[in-house]
Length: 437
Ligand SMILES: *Cc1c(COP(=O)(O)O)cnc(C)c1O
Image (tube, rainbow, N blue to C red; front, side, top):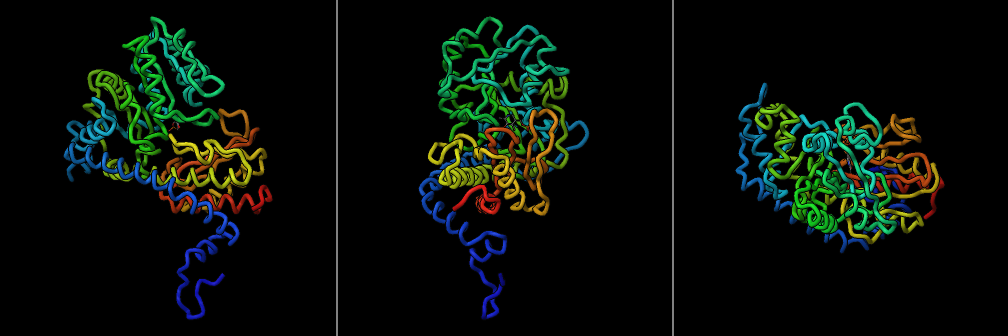
């Protein structure tokens, strides 16, 4: 299609721009109609983003973030004003006594392992009352044997699965809590499972039940993908610690690495002593030049998260209408940014991921293929063309090539990009003959 009209002026119609990027009129119209109907839903998401934007801003102002905070230290990093202030900002946002927010925490799994290994001692027991935790934690805990796991250090593990309808199995949770139970881990997001994501309110109910039985147990929440989706966070409903990754929601797409732990002073101190060294704790850890991105990303995180959330809702509505099972469904309230679409065939998963890849700002010209990823029992296909490698707050998708042939999709630094990416998936799915409009 020509990019100029008969007057030799630039054609500034958005539809024309979509056409230039490979979106057919048919797909454009189909998506437009769905979006029009989503306006009230998006307004609610925007209202939450507005609230959370103000919450972040207030924390930055209350903690007196200054220009000097944006600079970095080297070497030991004693008296790093920016690092210490950023940790105070996180503590203020999560309403906790303290926080540890560091580039030396390499990823979400590391942050979770750190929180667990520093707060558990030999002879203690860890309990997950919400079923199997995220894949990578299996080796941290020792569910799958691994060097250096909690199991090797004499920390035992108990798990109580959710009931069939997704509710808590209170009876067996009560039975599982004993003298040794020291820490309870609660995963907010469904991760790559089909169970529902937990709302902060439900997490609060679970924590209240557990604390009623054993008040001194530490309740930790794996907060990955959940930050800023709601107005409250798990620490507002009794969690002693929240843990997450900075290359997901709270990094706002700008943090190039990092993880956080926010919570009770003692929990955070234990984690700091483990991260650096007993006795040194939070006092060391140079921030190098990275803090400006941490602050900047955190400032943008509420609106970035809102854009990703709208993308997830948009995708759910498109694919549900085409007859595919989507989790969460088109109307459900949202507690994280992940969207699953069940295609039932490998072709569907592959076409979807090709669409996401083709929509990327980086590496849009490469074609994702299923491959034998270490640690998985089936081939996996992944699509991402991100500014920060592996960042899943950026537009990304992946799926194992095995029944029920579901693809997991998340992110998008702007809603405009998430929208385009989903339109590209639809175009790709249609072109592959997996679905018809
Ligand atoms: C992403 C994620 C993790 C692990 O984070 P990585 O940064 O990939 O190590 C843990 N739990 C949940 C629920 C996650 O979504």
